[in-house]
Amino acid sequence: MSGAAGGGGGSSCQGAAAAASCSSAGSPYAAAAGGSAGVAGRLPARVLEHVFSYLEMSDLMRCALVCWHWNNILADENSEVWRSLCNRSLSEEALRSDILCNLPTYRGKLKAFQHALSSHDCSRNVYVKKNGFTLHRNPIAQSTDGARGKIGFSEGRHAWEIWWEGPLGTVAVIGLATKRAAMQCQGYVALLGSDDQSWGWNLVDNNLLHNGEVNGNFPQCNNAPKYQIGERIRVILDMDDKTLAFERGFEFLGIAFRGLPKACLFPAVSAVYGNTEVTMVYLGKPLDG
Image (cartoon, rainbow, N blue to C red):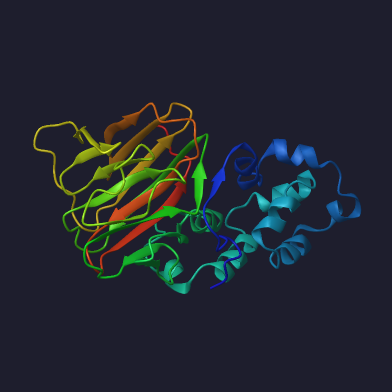
């Protein structure tokens, strides 16, 4: 599996410039900035699609800025261009399984891979499986282990799905972390939310955690149902309103955290159970309503 679309390094922060780059295809603003492409801009669409199908993500983002003609070709997120890059970049398992079932376009799948859990920004006791999206925790005693996403956010609205594919154990937390938050500690604890650099929802006891304190139960209702293995939880981060919310199925569970700091915040998970697995898939901008 090639790392062309996602990058194999540590986590980075997506601010205004990176967000503009990631959304340049199909953007009138981006296309207008490119001006005229001369003779290249008059090449037939089928010729350009063939050439573009050999390029990597960073090159395609630059091509989308050249002119309206090139931008319009790349605006089709299910075109041969994005299909070809998707097949080169993502594992066969990821493409054939239901991991990416909520992403209808090839470009959406590539973006999810770019934002997946990082194999370089995590505890030494976990690793990301070959599918590129699933975190596996090794059976290490008396250790809590976590991982951050490859890309953090300092602005905009973002959504991603997380689900457990194994036992939760005594602690299973999903949420946010800054780059400074620890991704490993001794004992079985709620790692996310254990300091002022992370915010977490413990799926085992439905507690919200931040700065080492319990911030109440979530969701705020009587007899809230416990998390079921395989159930997809949608996480919604609004860096403009500084809030973190959750959905389960098609039900909006409410806002869990308000007053998030003006910082780069990363999707994060922490687990304690040996051989358990957690999958995270970035969905993009959440749909209103």
